Length: 96
Image 1 (tube, rainbow, N blue to C red):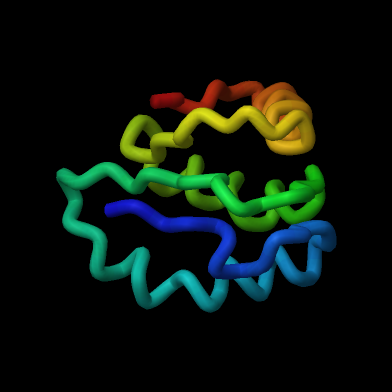
Image 2: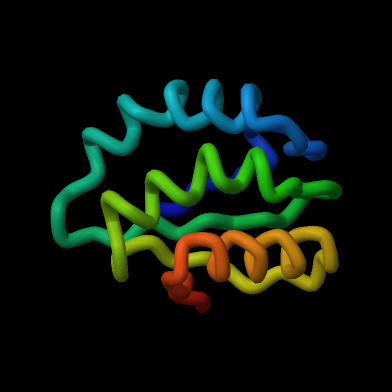
């Protein structure tokens, strides 16, 4: 399954909005088959903050582990934020 983060907006910047996005995503996450990967697509996202990412991606990483796959992005904001979150979680994301 692939999810485009742009559906939550193009400027993903606050902890509160990240938490709300994760809660809104829960029904979709429940439907994800246990053997299927979840691909995160950052296309269309202009700004991604560590606080939003921590509230949305960190719980997904905790639940899905290796089944969470992040699609590559040329966006420097996305790249920098993902590096920060990986260091904070002491766990690497899987990239495609």
